[in-house]
Length: 376
Image 1: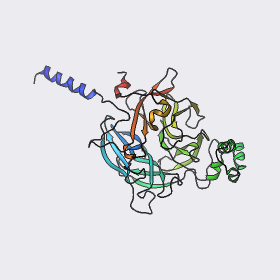
Image 2 (image 1 turned 90 degrees about the horizontal axis):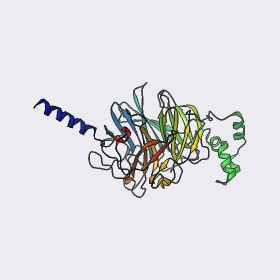
Image 3 (image 1 turned 45 degrees about the horizontal axis):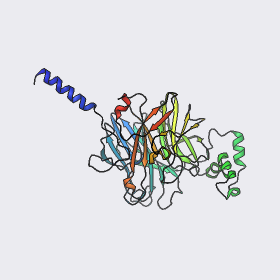
Image 4 (image 1 turned 45 degrees about the vertical axis):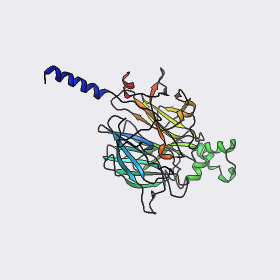
């Protein structure tokens, strides 16, 4: 081969490698076997040049966990290889994750200190509906698993929020659950804001449902979850090994009815996108910001722009992925739920953009590629 031909071949090869494939939100997303990716309510871990997408395996007729948490891998965020079940359900009826339980919103993070991969997820016990409201944690030596369940339970038993003042504690102590048999009244909402359900659940630990995990620049990790019967978000600090809670937590938007938290950090500001609580039906996204993970948090208008922005394009937030190697590149991830056939639920992935004042927004695009972050 001549030198000129070799150069041409190199250039053509480089161009082919740089060509990004389009992302089509809401469409079927086939894996390497041609089957739609089954990783709902999930999140993405980037480790040593590979992306790992973890999510709920949903069957055709039920949202209960009949298989477990799936893992898919990719080097470009568009071509996904099925790595199999990262955390399997158990056939042991005494196990917390026995087949038929509810395992939702798994998130995996890597612990630099221990070299372990840590998975947190929302767990409901088999046959108990959504009464358990537990957080569960599993661990693995490799990103794709298999993961081993460490345990599950309510969060921070016996601990009060770190931002609750002595005066606020006195106000909470004066509340009695028996005085609020009727829910959804103005008086009941005010009691929730003052900590009625914090007091109710104090001994056994706080409820934990829709959730995410965030690792900050200093390596500290935080478990963010919908608590107090989905009325209030909690932000709880994890231990150095990410396997337990330290007991320090704060409340975000008490009585605000937020779930599906997804968080990222840009230029020293924390941004969180959430949803309201309308079951499987989509609703208008909310957005909050703070200069500290501990708050105070400020609420902003709906960050979504474009068709069906008032219902988050038909989806619900699950995760925000920071794309490595690119400046200010973040992907908003959401699920389009289809409870009549859970396995057919779809995915919305859209780039987060920023206004001149730095406020994030998410605009609908029928298709886009990662070249968007290169200004192409």
